[in-house]
Length: 172
Image 1 (cartoon, helix red, strand yellow):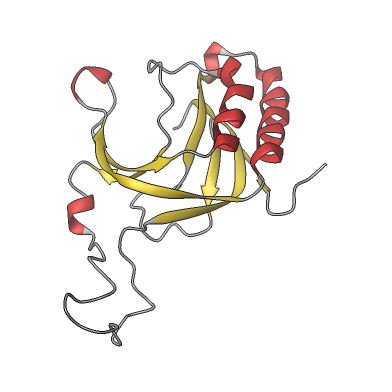
Image 2 (tube, helix red, strand yellow):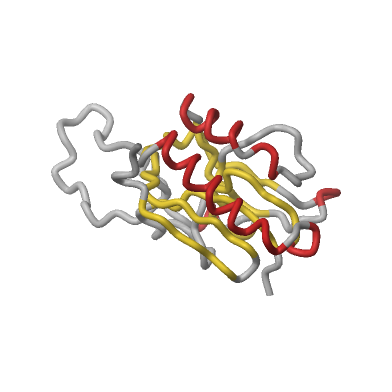
């Protein structure tokens, strides 16, 4: 049973992910017992406010990194690491009051799966073979690790309760 609190952006495609709930956590708010149950409405409002700052957006993947394990108390996982946009960083600042994470720095990432799982997913090495013309055999159904992700939904999660909003057209 999940007892965590978070606001997260959800990608439009999670085919690369080996988790049940592909997401990029904007802020981790601790455990349900650490907050008043009436705060869920405030979390939802803050999720909407953060989504209005970003609208739908894409983030470039800068690499794959193993996170967790060792002394963190969290299991080791492989994660896609993103290059943040100024809007994403501003959205993070607006929800910083919820932060109950043990980590002091915001590292935009999305978990792929357990440590070592990224090695089992193919990488697209190059669309253009070296010293050759265009790769006419390019497979449009390629399902490897992405070079960028498009986020078009935001979720406010309070344990097992989730409120998810489409943010493609969220504006004032």
